[in-house]
Length: 461
Image 1: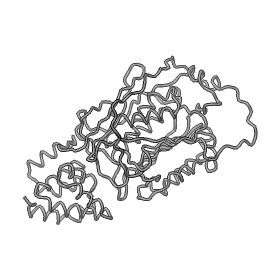
Image 2: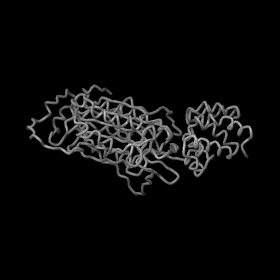
Image 3: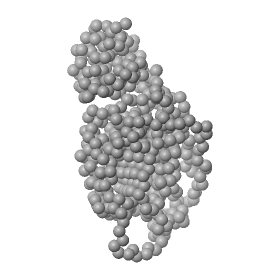
């Protein structure tokens, strides 16, 4: 049955508003899931050069897809919270359908979601109580639908959530603290970086959500709040910046490297949450900057106050467009139980655990690019995955692993555990198969680096 003439006319009457305001990617997700559009039609829409052209093409093709497509389009607008546009179409939607669709909107239920997200998780414990971590209550067979995107992160939109649709913000990380006797026992300044300053250092969190033409990064604010909470609890002063252009990002990183507060700090952290491609970070203006250019801004020459201090980068962004389909294996082996260092908390005295220093010889040169670790969400040429309510797989895993194990593991061990958690603990079923993700670590650290979260750092849980 073709679309009724009055419905087609209503779309034509409101074409200017639709082509100015419609969020194509969110709506297209729903139209594909409900089989209004095929994958080929969706690709044809996404291939249009500008955002306006994509909107025009979507409306034009929608009018060719039958009368039921009109109500599905209205449903998509309601479910993606584009209520102004939905209200324009409402006069031509059956009253019963309006009540049903608006009643279902809060739960974000998609009856015909075609994606399966399977978090394979275990629960960590903190001194006998469960750690509240991201997504640990997930189970198999909860429906997730992929939000289509341009060359950037692949999105996952939650379908049916028995526990509600509130973003999974970590108000209680359940971070396990280390104690002074443990640090005194293991600290060796020849093999380990000192990290005892208060604050430990500065942590810059750059969060890009809304782009000029690329898809909005739903769920990234969850990542921002969780990672900021984590590093604040670890003893860092947090600097948050949202929705920055490439020029602004470059300026931010340069200014961060020259911040006078680094003089009294012993480490620095930079977290970037954005779209990306092929060793580049994309700003909200859709321009790109090389990751290596950003790293260079914090080297010893450009940021002398950070010389010989660990600089940790965490990059949540795609590095290409390929999808990792994994491989079949007969067995999956989890890590063996690890020992716990359990002792009473006590006042921390830096001078009690630092061995006497031998005077350094003058003019010892250190490589300009030393003392850096970069943790990428995925390997070169591949996409990364993000859930609209829980945030990205990568940041979820970092928060969970660091909270439980930073008290007695160095950062490279922690990131290896994160690699394992993401690689073995997450998957999503797509049209072309089961998709996986593999983070990557590159390290130019010269010693082991520990966060050593202590209760006296000023962050309580």
